[in-house]
Length: 332
Length: 254
Picture (cartoon, one colour):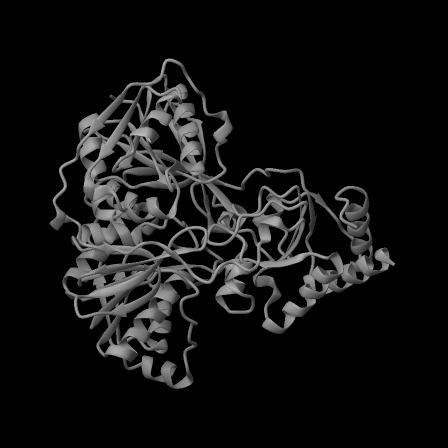
């Protein structure tokens, strides 16, 4: 094959949403290039998942099965995918940009002398007919176009797709289903150097931000722990839940369970009021589904304004007290 | 335990970025640079491991002369010595090429553990650590919140998505990429800054690039807005009044 191979993840017996989005990216890239899109799924006892994939308008589905792939390890996954990519020789290998992919895909790319183009937000055709991969730099302040460099020998291009960049509901289905081919990689127990334990959750979430209709969220711009009270007062006036970006929770100014973003909760309230949040990618993926976004930030170039409906480029220490007062007055 | 911390120097977080003529990179002339924050967490973890278990912490960075200030900061915070790979052509090297430079310097030291941040605040590719582990042929784990030394190596707490975690056991030598929030960052003390002046920094020449880059950087530009943002202006009270009006009539939460 010379087309596009998408590596799909599954959790709790279901294909993850970000994997479906990566598949949509793969279908779109294959269409752009006039080539085929295939999918690979790894694990043990994954026949039903492979069958589900076969209905997604793909040229073929590869079920990569091995007892040592039952639980994820970087070593097992890298070895299995290296063998699959060597066998199939796809021109492009796409992944969802997840924590798991971040853990093994750079090593896989290194084995082919390549560099993973990570966290891709769009794929455009370039003037020479190949694809251009768009990714963000400087915490989302700038975009950059990347292209695989022309190379003499066979060199697959590896890219991971940011959550939300492609729509899972744009994924094409097809009848008849794609053929499923099983692939048994050869992996020796001694090649797996790490021993993972079962995943666990710390104390159950007592704050469910996902159900809140109004969220007031605070970021680095608040500067000091004692200033959090200013934002809490506004949240109280609006009857809103208080949330934060990661640095605020890292500093211990608010508990981790109030964190919105890729490592915290994903929210889609009626109103998301972002205060002193610059809008790094990791935060935006957790809130860009909000119906209305209002952002207050003193840097008019902050990426948060790219997803905001209303923006205030001013000092939050002036705007927030004035807004609290106006909200209380409006409520009588 | 001998620990190497790989550190990147990046433009200040609040820097006003201008695109250089030609549109291939940013204009670096007026930029001030700082310690890549995720790497500061890696250094903190290394210093805490040394406090508990003894050993040595070595700060490693590649880049032009200006990188020396970031290495000095690492020494002031408590690193024992520093290695500076002097390279003026980082913009022309891709992740793999840069990781080869770091790997060569690391091999010469045979450390027990290599720590780095989970990503850089500038390019944000988030790969140097994993690529380094692959080049060095050692096991790795990413996005680590806690590190514990055991009789067989390490037991680390790895952050997964959506509030999940996992413990992973692994032998040494190993490489970890450290997540923020596991530790509080220390400040350099006056004493630390003084001591740093007498700590050794080895400056190594960067080997020339032997392979062409695998990926090309075609263009850098300001992102197009995903939404039409209406910017509200005026005095604070005027802005507040406009916002309240939006909350009442359009967002309907008041």
